[in-house]
Amino acid sequence: MPDDPRKFRRFETNLSVLLKPEQESSENIEAKLVDVSSNGISVLVEKPLPIGEKLEIEIQKSRHVFMPILIGSGEVVRMSDDKKITSVALHAGIHFTDPDKSAIQRLLQILQRIRLAESRKR
Image (cartoon, rainbow, N blue to C red; front, side, top):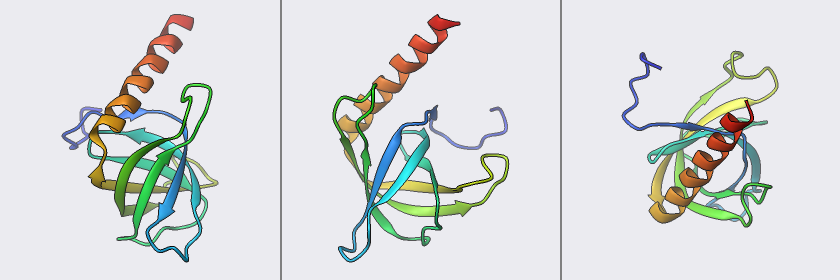
């Protein structure tokens, strides 16, 4: 993406993620991870998230992720219903506020392995 002003490389994915609001009275939110970078994530959610909401971010177990990965805390910085992405869900941007850098690095390595395996199938 030459027009993308972001400084950090983003890795596209469709892994499941669990967003845990810091307020204990709020329910956990299941989402789909659109992409991840060392600075934050983009997710698809069914309901709008308040800008400024603080969340714990956990990548869920899947065939590529053998156990949940808590990648740290973040803050919702953007909400969009961009129809180019999907007509069903909303798109949220979450900036890491307290990232677990080693967990994020493990996740990025998993995503690189997935991308490599997919490219070999073609």
